Amino acid sequence: PPPGTPQTRRRDALIVSLLAYAGLRPGELRVLRWENVHEHTILVQRAANPDGSIKATKTGRRRAVRLLAPLAQDLRECRLAVGRPPARALIVASAAGTPWTKTDWENWRERQWAPACRAAGLDPVPRTYDLRHSFVSLLLAEGRQPVWIAQQAGHSLAVLLSTYAHLIEEYAERERVDPELEIAKVREMNVRLECVSATEERSAGLTAHEKSPASAGPFWNGSDGTRTRDLCRDRAAL
Image (cartoon, rainbow, N blue to C red; front, side, top):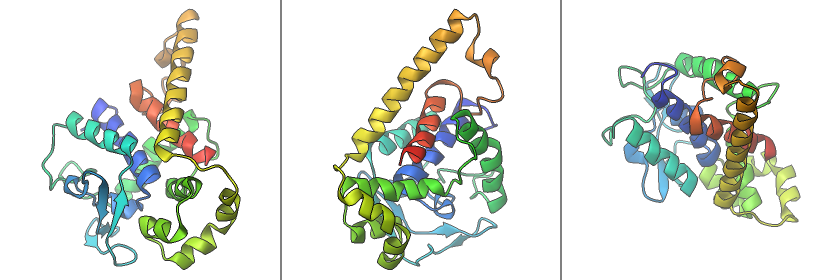
């Protein structure tokens, strides 16, 4: 679908959800198919080369990532919105139905991700890869064991321990969190903020579009805009 449509806004929000709540690498996301989404897990078994051709994952192993309920809902809503594509279809695809190339991904980061982050008040704009770090941080805050987290992220245990040693120490003494409840709370909070903002703008005689047609970013309209900014704030909060 062309940019700026409800379908593409929903797709863009789903991309962020998959990075933040399933910890996919961008190359893994670019070749993910609907058939890889199961009832309780997402099966990650391949990745994309820069030209969009298929290769093995970074570790050469497949992994089953736990499917959190908010992400499962995002996936269901997106699939319904785009007309229930067949199981073999890519979740994110070019107009020809082929995997995005690295150039396609970089264009998305520049045209959709960066404006959405700025609209969320994140400056400088974080890397999309930081959402994968948020995923690991969320599992650590949940109190999961490093071995299991490494499996979920597709890391070796050694890499996990060296990269996240400071967070492992920090979360060791903290109260455990429920990831699904935390995601729900942030989304609900930002829905309320959206409602307050819209009310204030109407009182001033302005619509959201009149107030910020460009700077609001491509995910502004409706729940998709709220969801994308929620996810950006989730990253910052973690």
